[in-house]
Length: 151
Image 1 (cartoon, rainbow, N blue to C red):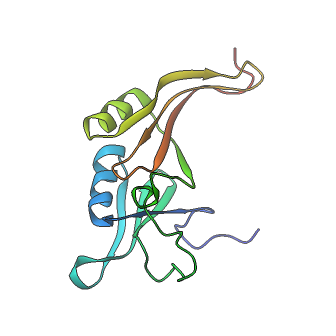
Image 2 (image 1 turned 135 degrees about the horizontal axis):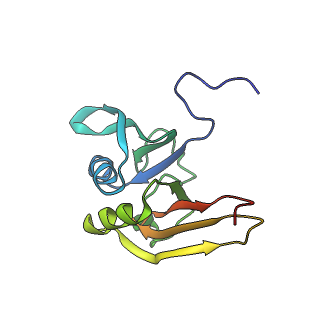
Image 3 (image 1 turned 135 degrees about the vertical axis):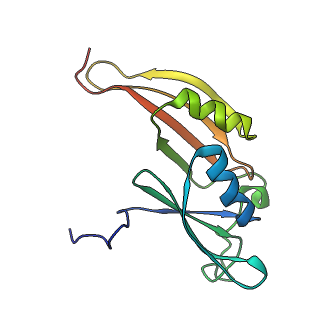
């Protein structure tokens, strides 16, 4: 494989919101993302944004926009789609319990409580939880407790 552009991960996801400026602030406060880039257009419209978590990156955008063809409406918040989700994002964190408490304090709706998933010694064990953000996107956060082959 050819190398990716400098400071760019192999895979990045886009997440769309009715109010992307508010979502950017909320994702940083609630989930601990760090703002890497925010390009604003007229009236404060978010033209492009990049948020980092460790080596991971997401782009946050508004509904519609240049990437939304008239015959397709994929650039939508779950709140605009009857709370339907077409993707879930999974992020490994260093301290999942502290992350959970921070997210809940910021208003994240937990639908999968903190629990350990142990797949046996030949696999791994994680502790994690699932939640919705302020516009209904589903997120899973986990902390690796045991790697493959460890007792």
